Image 1 (cartoon, rainbow, N blue to C red):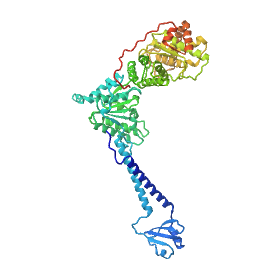
Image 2 (image 1 turned 180 degrees about the vertical axis):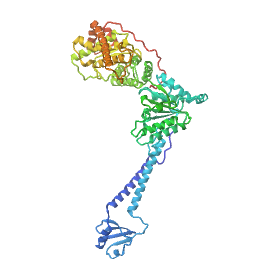
Image 3 (image 1 turned 120 degrees about the vertical axis):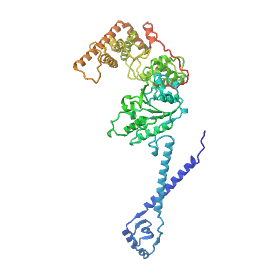
Image 4 (image 1 turned 60 degrees about the horizontal axis):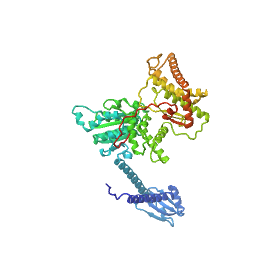
Length: 613
């Protein structure tokens, strides 16, 4: 509905403001001119000038005397209370006027008008800021500095439901109690049960914590307050606590409702670290938050607090105790099925042809958040638009994944023939071990010697599923694969290059974990050796020996496999030198081997339009 137009808006308001500004400028100019052209002289100097006949005009107002010299200059002075004005009458050609005592002088009038103008303009500006900040619910005005700037959404504005959030099945189940409580509070109160006052959602950025909070409000059909914890803290002590009080006061007036505090670690970290003896602004804000959540005067209003953080380790213990954030909901990275659901949601916003295999994209994006997956889809659409193609295809998605994981292709890098050949054999070594140990390594996806990011070549594997643990054989096979790049270079060129540095670093890290954390060393046994533990020299030496032994064992295993299959190594390297990029199917065709089949995900497509995490 269109609001009626107010009179004091638009053109009229501009005219009034312009008129007031012009009047102020004129008054100010007159005052400045008067002050610049008027000399403030001492009484002795005035008497001397009067005696010598230098004064042409004289105006007296009590003890205040103003006059004009015969050369046109103005002056001001103050005469004694018993001053004999008859001395003026003795002078010739002088205009002498005695003003009434109540009459104000021009400088005084101008000063008063200017003062009233400045004061009025200041008060009008402050009042306007206060009203604007109050109407918007924020605290940006000078009179609203203690008001919370939380945004309030009425139930009609929150359209997100659980069906609109792809994946996160476990987190949804944990939040069902909160929704049930907001819908049916009497169901719990009859049994004397209390729903958790606060629920803390923990997860890495981009995994959908904020969207989950909106979905809870949408499912419960209640008001929703959203605020960032960093907006509480200001440089002025007490402002943050005042904003917390204002937020909870507004929430109780609109109960039942949900208060969502994003990045709560901004105010909820451990106390006692401030420069003022633990009494700084952040800690006062936290203390007020603790009191509002579960204090002496806490009411029983149905106000549920949801908060999000990716740093639960820094939160104060008082914030996590029962009665406050006593329930924690983990919001993890999406698994392979959840990634497929998220991709199905995002792909509805772009045009794709039938060549796009979302199942393959989902399996190749292990460790991607929902935001990362949205970036993949968007990057594929950008590539298609740049290429002038009407629909994104499988190649666009492959390129998008390569750009995000490795970086943009370096077309300006020109390698020598020897460098290209060494890179080809290096990647061929990784690829061949990947093929020869299919039971312990993830299936091969593709291999390339096109420089990307900091790598001159890359061998990609495509997981069949998300892995949450690994056995000893799988870890040793992975170390052998990492060693195979250097071994292939030595077999062909009898040289050692620097390209294996990253492989050695990863291999050493894996073996270190096998020896120190996973109990995969017969000499050290099932004992965990943490980084901050104090080891004896004998233990350090033993750990070093075991790491070297396992690395050498894996190195020897990879060397034997490559020597026994030298013809296959040469075929893969020559294929890379010719094409620069080989898919898994092309590699298996070069070696005249049958490619193992990869199981597809059994998952129905998302039918309804959705908002992804």
